[in-house]
Length: 108
Image 1 (tube, helix red, strand yellow):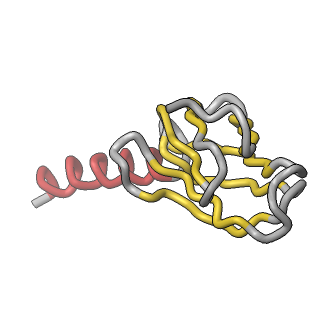
Image 2 (cartoon, rainbow, N blue to C red):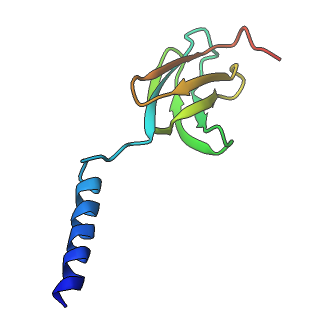
């Protein structure tokens, strides 16, 4: 019986240490999105899409305002808001990715 308890205890201890932060790795990052002050005077629903196309986060932002998104999947994301030009950026866990959405300069 003792032979079985020791490996189970060691495995359980390793799992607890991993989940508690020893060796744990957060696979998300942050994006800061500013809506241009030149945009029409109404709130915009800013959406952040992961590289898979799945909606990751969303918030309402007024022109000239900034929304900060946490928990965004790492890698390339697309940020969109109604009639504003979509922007792509790369999210890493080292720094906050910054994006400004504008009404001009849209690429086809």
